[in-house]
Structures are given as C-alpha cells and as structure tokens.
Length: 166
Length: 344
Image (cartoon, helix red, strand yellow):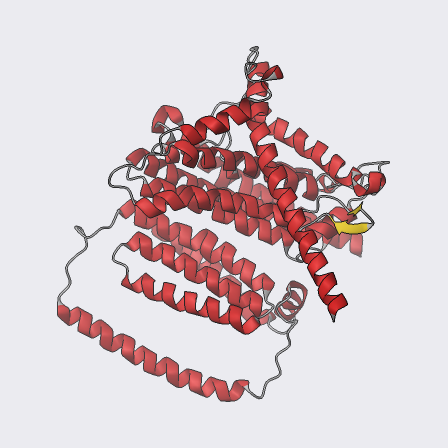
C-alpha cells in the first residue's frame, strides 16, 4: 500500500518536474512546479513528517510560488518577447546540467552506503519531537539560520529602497 | 480477522458518512448565507429584501442556483481554456477541504454507535487550516490570469498581494494561541476551553487581529478590492459566467462559514458554553452551540460588509504591514511573557 502510494507520487513528481522545464509558457511552468511541491509534501507525509509537509505547503506552495506567479503575470512573458538564444547557449546548458547530474549521482552513491547503518526514528517528524530537537541538539544551526533570514530581509529592504540615506 | 475487517469497514463508513453530511451542510449553509446576506442588507438599508420565491423568499437560493445553471457558459477568446475551467474548481475545492479538521462536537451517539464529530484529528490541525487558506489564492490568480482580460489580471494581482500580506499577521496571531494552549490540534484546543474558559479572554488583541485577517482572507468588504466593481468591472471573475461564476460566489460563502467556525473554535470555546454540557441530547448539544456561534459570526461578517466602505489600496497595505503585523508581534511577546510569568 505504502509502496503503491510512493510510486504514484514519485512518478507524478518526476513527470511534473520535467514539465516545469519542458513547457514553453512560464506560467504553466510555475503551475507544474506547484504540483511537484504537492507530491513532495505527500512524500513527507509518507515519512510521518506531517509538520514538515504542512510547512512545506504553507511556505513553498502558499507563499513563494504565489510570488513567482505574481512576477510571471506582471511581466507577462510569452513567445514573442522571449529572447531567442543561440544553440551555443543550449549546448553549454546541457553540458553544465550533465556535470551537475554526475556530481549528484556520485554524492548519492556515497550517501546510500552510510544510510543503511543508521536506524531512523519514525517519530522524529512529529511536531513535538521536531521542536525539542531544534531547540536542544540543533539550536546553534537553527539560530544561525534565523540570523541569515534576518540579514536577507535587511538586504531586501535595502535593495527596495535605493535612495536610502545611510 | 473478519471482525477487524468489519470494524475497519464500519469506521470507514462512519467517516464517509461524516464527510458527506459535512459537505451537504456546508453547501446548504453557503446557499442560505446568500439569502441571509440579502436579508441583512435589506434590513440595514430599510428594505424588504427577497420575498417572491416561496414564503419569506425562502426558496430564493434554489431559484438563484437554477438561474446559474441555465445561463450561457462562455469561454472568452484568447483565454487559457483548461486553466479557465480549472480555476473555479480549485477555489471551491480548497474552500471545502478546510472543514475536515474542525471538531463539530464531542461524540454523537446514534443507534448505539459512538461517532466522533470530527473528520480527522491531526495533531497539526491549525497549520492545516493555515495551509489551505494560503492555497485559496490560486483559484483567484489562475482564473484572473487565464481570462486574458486586464481587469481580471488586476483583480488577481490584488487578491494575491492582499492574501499574502494578511496571512502573515494571521499566522502570528495563531502562534500566540499555540503558545498559550501548547497544542496545534483543534480538538485539544476546544477541550481546553470547557465552560467559560475561552481563549478570547486571554487573547483579546490576538482575536481582533485574527478576525480582521479572516475578513481580508475571505475577500469580504471592507477588503473586497479584488472584485472592486467601480474600478475593475467584476475583478478576477469579470469573464466568468454561469455556474463557474456561481462556484466563485459560492466559495466566498463557504470561506465565510469555515472562517466563522475556526474563529468560534479557536477563540470562542468551540462547542463549549457555560452551564451547557456538549454531551446533552446524545451529543447533539455540541454542534447546536457551535453552529449558534458560527451563525453569529456570519451575521457579524455581513453586518461589517453593509456598514463599512471599501479601503483604498494603499490603506489596505498600510493596515496589513504597518499596523497588524507589529501588533501581532507585540501580542506574541506579551503572551510569551505571560506564559513564562504564570509557569514560574
């Protein structure tokens, strides 16, 4: 049962992820990306990480993708305004993506051998355990991530206000 | 084995029945909210309101529904056909999904069987509701963009920026409640508010922020800029007709019903009332109390709509970002300080 759900979600995730890249219309790409995020949220639920799944939907599907869509609609990109790129760029892109694929496959292969030894705790994704772990074992990385977000926010305000006097 | 299977099938049937009843009740209340809205508007404007279809005009929602189905279904030229059809479906689907985690009562005893009056008690109930509210904007955005009409697009863009802005303050006001109750489950929240121990007593400011944000998330007046008819013809649904338009209008009332239910559950004790046990009448007293509260809040929503004029766009953004979010953060800090004070 779980395997069947996993396979369905995984196949939909891969197909929609491909459609993000392949569709010509940028708004369609964003909509396919939202679908991909939903299937990934489903995979999180299969891993018993409900909190991560819901936060994933709220943050990525509910906020970030809305902003993406917002910008796409404002720019109103379509085939006429899309700059025609030469084939050299396409070949360059394909080579770069292929190298990334090789790196990822190499990294994954190393990871699988390590994973087999670890005993994963199935309850760790529940909100209480996650909160405890975040505020005890991982409190330093958690706070650093918070400062990073604050810095990004300040940077965004600074970029938004060009005539800001300092 | 067969006994287990039988129990499993029974539980499944129970849940299925509950979902069906919830679905029908939601649709019925949404339909009669349109009637209620027109009667409230008529009352506030010293008119009679609908009184032709049936006694006191009670059949008006049915007549409206038939009218919606009979009208010409038009898909404008140059629109994205499939997205245009999909968008109202997404909007009403998202609106209907939220009711699943609300505890409508304790347990109902029916023909000797105990039925939990909640479709599912997930331990992240309030986040589930916030998640689905944040998705509601897609129905509007996709519909507005796919219409290939500049007024629709303006409406869609307004709706998305408004909903994103007010979601933040809404989430921050909910965090204060979560800090106070120590749970994300709506069932536990409702149980903790038994008698007159309502959250609103500890969270008056949080409730005010949540209520204003709920008005904005439902696109109700004074926050109905996405469909501002004096500037944008009909806003995001300008190009929609027939039952597709009906879906949009209907979903607005469903959203209003669900927001009232969430407000009643989170801040006003849910199915609890002083000196009333929700287990009375075989468990039916809980839903009765909760629905009385919900109807009261739906009335307040309508009262506000027919009393206040619409905000200007800059006022809307000013209120969201510069007033509500700082107030919500202040409320969060005060709640945190209060929780620490009473714990130590």
